[in-house]
Image (cartoon, rainbow, N blue to C red):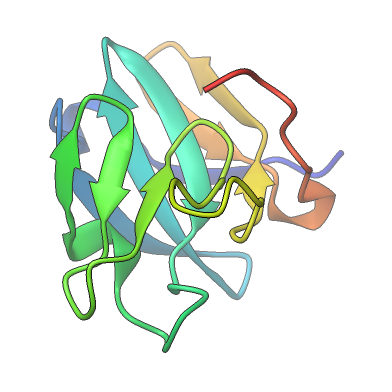
Length: 110
């Protein structure tokens, strides 16, 4: 695993997204219930900016065309298929570290 420093924890706001470039990859970070999640920052539909979408609990809605994803798994909430890569996240003190080289298919129940 190759974790990269993404940002400071205080740069993230509960219930909203933040787009970052991590090791050459566009990543959307979300804090929900004080847990940090990282998914591909580009919507699988037509490339919209996932981090700019409205967040309701674990659901983010792409601002371009309304596609919805679970930020914990990258699963499209309409089809039930995983459509966004998700990445391992570690919070180390006040820093958020993300491993974009180890994109995972999250099997967590949404």
